[in-house]
Image 1 (spheres, rainbow, N blue to C red):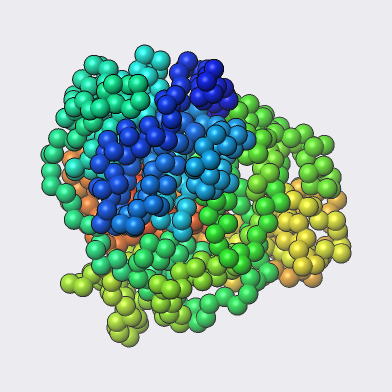
Image 2: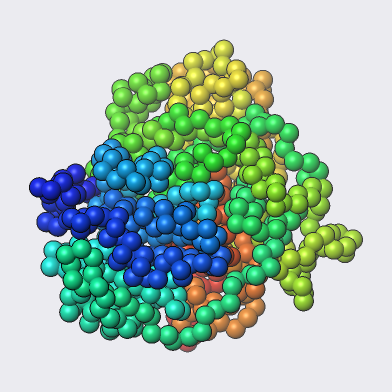
Amino acid sequence: MPDPLVPARLAFAADGTPFSEAYGDLYHSAEGGSAQARHVFLQGNGLPQRWRGRRCFTILETGFGFGLSFLTTWQAWREDPARCARLHFVSIEKHPFQDSDLAFLFKKYPHLESESTRLAARWPMLVPGMHRIEFDRGNVVLTLFFGDLAEGLPQLRFAADAIFLDGFAPAKNPAMWEPRVLRHLARLAAPGATLATWSVAAPVRAALEGAGFSVEKDKGFGTKREMLRGNLISRKKTNPEKNPLRSVIVIGAGIAGAAVCERLAARGWGVTLLERQSAPPAGPGRHAGVFHPVVTRDDSLFARLTRASFLHLLNHGKNLENLEWERCGVLQLARDGEEQAAQRAAIDALALPPGYAQYVTRKAAAAHAGVPVAADGIWFPSGGWIRPLSLVAAQLASAAGRLEARFGCEVSRIARESAGWTAYDHAGRTLAQAPVMVLANAAEALTLAPSRCVRIRRVRGQVSFLPAGKFTAPRVVVLRGGFVLPAHRGESIAGASYDFDDDDAAARADSHAGNLERLERILPGTGARFDPAALEGLVGFRAVAPDRLPLIGALADDGAATPRNPQPATLPRLEGLYGAFAYGSRGLLWAGLGAELLASMLEGEPLPVEGRLADAIDPGRFLLRSVRRATSAPA
C-alpha cells in the first residue's frame, strides 16, 4: 500500500522564490524559473528542434513541483509553428500542491497565464497514482504520477525522447538521485533519447553513466556555472512507427466499443464500427447507471483501478457534448458491522482528501441523502449517475469525422489475412478489413476469438423504475447491496438483479421483488410501498471474467508455444487483435480509461495507468496463470 499523499506546503524564500520546507531547497533558480527551464531542460535536450517533424514526442520529468517546466515546455510547443503533432509530458511528484496554492503560485508568472490558468482548472484530486489531463484538443497530454519516484518509475511504460531531471539538490533529497532509481531512466528512454539537469554532482554523473548514458557538462543558467547534458548510449535501432496505416475495425457499439471509437478517432485513426443492432440509440433512454470508486484499506489493485477509472471519467466526461449525467454524490452504506469497521479503517489509513471520499455516520449520510438511510457509510462527493445511451451517443458523435458506423452488421467470423483482420457475416461475405481489430462485444468476443484459458460468464441484470410520487427519493445515489437513484423525469431507479446464466430478456416480477428488497435495506420502510407486479423495468446483460476484472489489451495466442518463465511482455499474441470486454457491472467506470489504455498501446504512447494495473487487466493473464500452474506442478 502506498503512503498517503502529503501535499506540499506553500512557502517562499526571502526573495520571494518558491521554497520547499520539507527539503530546504528552492523550486527553481532565483534568477527565474521559466528562463531556467528553457535553458536547462529545453535547450539542454535540443528542443524545440528535436520535436519538429515528429508525429509524437514524449518527455519524462522527475519532479513536477508546481509545473513550471511543463508550462514552459507547453508554451514553447504552442509558439513553434513546426511543432510535433502530439506532445506527451510525463512527470512524477511526491508532494503535489493543493489547487488553491497552485493558483496562488501561478500569479507570480504572468507570462504563463494562458497555460497556467488551464492547468489550474484541470488540476486533479490529490490521490495516489496516475492522472491524465489533455489540453489543446488532446494534442498536449500531461500524465502525472502522484507518489514516490522510486515507486513510480518502475510502473511507467513508455519510451521517452527527452528527460528532465528536476529534483531537489542531491544533498537535500538524495533518494531521487540514487543509482537504483536512475537505472530506470535507461529502460524508459527511446533510442536517441537525451537528458538534461542543472546538477553536475559527481555521484549523479556516475549514476547516469552507470545507467547507460554518456554525459557532459555544459554552460549553466544564471549564477550556476555548469549543467549536465546526456545521451542514451545506443543499443538498438529506432523502431518503425506502430500501425502506420492507423485503421481499425471495432466490433460492438456499446459502452466499451463507443469509447474505443472515440479515443482512436481523436488520434486520427480511421474507425469502422460494426454493430449487430439495427440502429444507434435514439435519445438518452430511461436507464441510468452509477459511477463511483472503491476504497479498501490495502489500496488493492481493484481499488486503484476503480480510482484511476473514476478520475478519468470525471476529467474526460467534461469533453463530451450532450452527455446526460449528474455528479450528485454517492453514498455507499455499510451492509453490516464488519463492513462498517472496514470502511472506517480504509478511510483512516489512506488519508484521502474529503473531496474524494470520507466516512460519514448514519446521521450525516441521511443529511446528504435528504431522507433517512439505514447505516453509516462512505460518501463520494463527486460520484453520481450517467445515462449509458447518452454516453454512447456522445462518444460516437465525438468520433464522427473519423468513424464509419455500420449498424445491422452481425459478425459471424473473423480471420487474419494478408490485409490484416477481416470480419465476415453469416453468409461468408466480407464486412470490413483493417490491420487492427478490437473486440468490444462483451461475452460474444470469445465466440469470435476462442480461448482455452478464458471463461466469460453472462449475467442478467434488471432494474426497476419507481414512480417518484410514491416515495421520497434521495437527492444522491445510495448503495447497499443494490442502489437507488435520485428522481429524474418523474421516476427513480432501483436495482439491480445479478443472475448468472439467465437469458430471459423480459422484465419479471420476481426480479422487481428482489430490487424492492434491496431498496428496503437502503431506505427502510420504502420497499413495501410498491407492488412488484405493477412495476416497469429494463433488462441488460453483462459479461464477467472469473476475477471480475475487465480484459483490455492485446489478445493472447494460447495456441502458440509459450516461452520459459513467461511474463506479460513475452506472451505470444494474436497480432493486431485486441479486446475491450468483460466489464461486468462497472462498464460506465472502466470503459473510458480502458479505451484510453488501448489507444495508447496502439499508438506506442505512455500508458495512462501503472504497469501493475495494465498487467492486472491484460487478456493474457489467464494464459500466464495456466502456464505457470503447469510448470510449477510436480512431475
